[in-house]
Length: 228
Image (tube, rainbow, N blue to C red; front, side, top):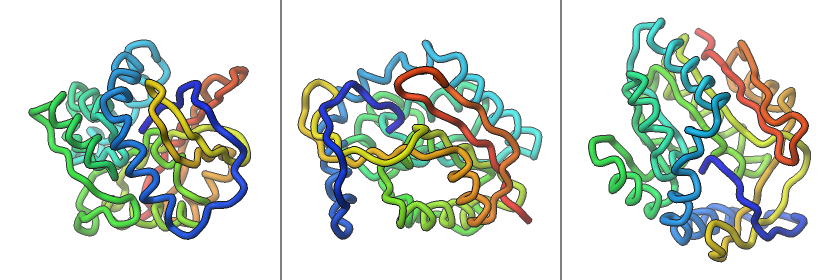
């Protein structure tokens, strides 16, 4: 779930209970095929995104290699790109429909259904993880839980790459990716806020890359290392 289209949206008033989780799963199940088409050439046209993924690949390799979890992998295009860089990457996504598309489009790779707050991985079992514009649907009160889950599964000294929309507040997106109905809350966050949350979760932020600074949809990538 790594991009946002020119989708119909409305201001967000409140996020009731945990219904957002079912809404997010259902929405991405609905748009899985059209979303895969939407992002198919996203990396090819984005040298800065590719550069960020190359940095992650180098950091993991320098630290001795190992598996890397692409959390919120969507249709698997980022997972596949990392594999092309020599990373032992595998994907996890909340949406069974997305996982089905990922397995169809990238049959040689590993994909599983899972939640960011319960990854189903052993403690310290991965050399790194990334959340490539996939944290954007987590409410503020849930985001720290997901970051702590990342820390649990990343080994000491392991890497985490987080990409996200930059800004303030949130909107409710009701349509997108081929005109299909959706109901997902899209959060924008400031890099300094995300860095603080990563620090609270036990990561050291080592670098950040700002994207589209003067555009309507600015973004950022934070590179962090799990503290010993």
